[in-house]
Length: 66
Image (cartoon, rainbow, N blue to C red; front, side, top):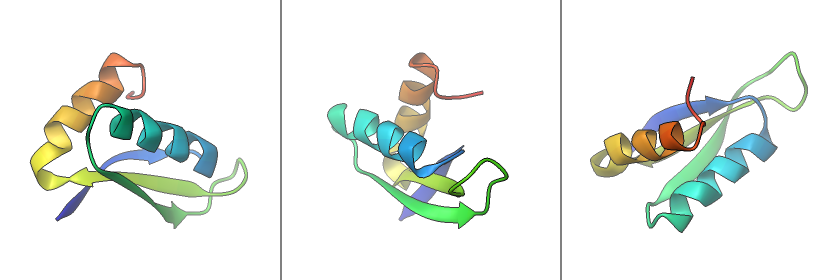
């Protein structure tokens, strides 16, 4: 099952974070989450439920969490 681990401000940021997670050996997906005032819309970054904690940790270590 997929779990949302981050909401990205746009598709480019979501793709970057997805690539980062995949480069660490984790499965990741993105999907549209709504409209952003900044442009192309918000995107959810998802990881497998079993890998969600590790994925969040990776994002935080690289400055991808707030």
